[in-house]
Image 1 (cartoon, rainbow, N blue to C red):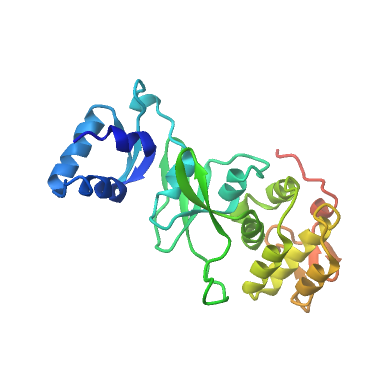
Image 2: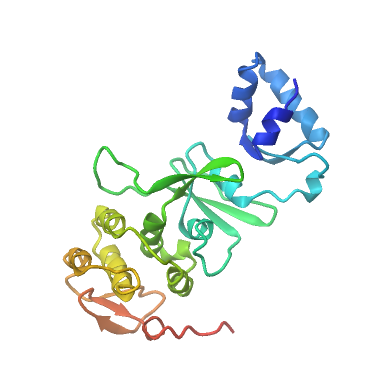
Length: 268
């Protein structure tokens, strides 16, 4: 059984995808499929990434020289994988810095692993209250290098990284990255934020929308919706990281001077 037609169109693939291709052509024996995979790995046509996940090696290339696209890897580490957080910022071209740690959403718990100097970290899909008919909003399917990958939308990504800044590269990285965003769907941002029913998240998103009010043409009604859900008492933006700061209304957030003044310290 020749695999060339499959390999040409699947630069990264899960075992289940190859099995479906072979089953459609009358090859159902699992031992035969495993032997076929082993043969093509030995011939240098296939590169094993991890159990059940492989990359195709273009004709004329060597497996040792093959650099596998990390977004394709992350998008196929689980059958429901979704590129998210800082990795989604990178995918959308809105990350200030390129990171070698790639986050993806998955319903099952999966261990982190490394491949070709890249680290892949699964995050269990966060559960947020919301409409039954839309339990997991803000996920797009986008063509990337010939394959369809699932990635959180820019609007959802903005909220997700503010909800979990460590997965967005930290506050300094977030501040610089969000500056690179030219436009967002404000209805999508606010609606997704309010699904969390979390005062701190509503305040963080509201604060950033207010900072970008002119650039993103943020109508006051969006800010009012978020302000109505902000904490009633002052709360630190991130007490562990920033133990002091200035109270910013109406968000009741204590913001550090470095963020207010955009004067991040250079690393030592």
